[in-house]
Length: 198
Image (cartoon, rainbow, N blue to C red; front, side, top):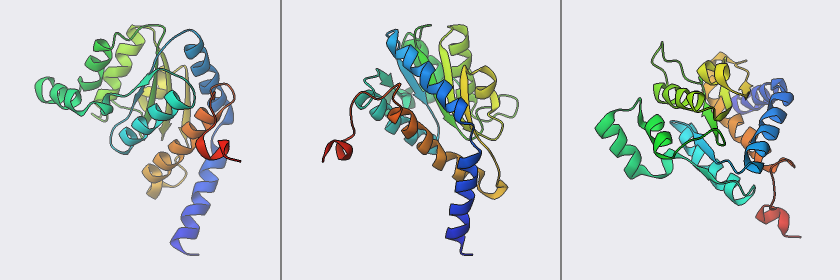
């Protein structure tokens, strides 16, 4: 078996092990937030920051959801990091965005945040703000889901079936899951371009 064949086989197994009900809970919860006029704030670091930016585009364009990500304003993000530090870069942005109990966070993260081990501390601080303000929390995370899974209303955990490829499978299948969400009948309002062309 080639590496490519093995990686594809692993991906298929991991995808098949995801709990579909957790995805459905995310879809219905996000739809309720939108129905009530809430906004969606999508958070991620590293590769997940790229996912966050892409997902904001799709939630806005396909789902008609008012959505934002702190990574889309590099001037504000880097000013906050430079002046106040990494840990508060997302939490203070959420405060500046007037996060409320009508809104929701959607977190993309391999580990989900772990303050004790100093992993993705900025996600943990942002989640603490969301909990304090009673915003809904959703996640697509890997491993055991970390802090995100502990405080989320619903969370999709990408099972870490292959120790050598946890990050690759989590980030790769995260994109599959949020594309599923923006395509879900509970959320989708507009067809994507290629599906609209007959």
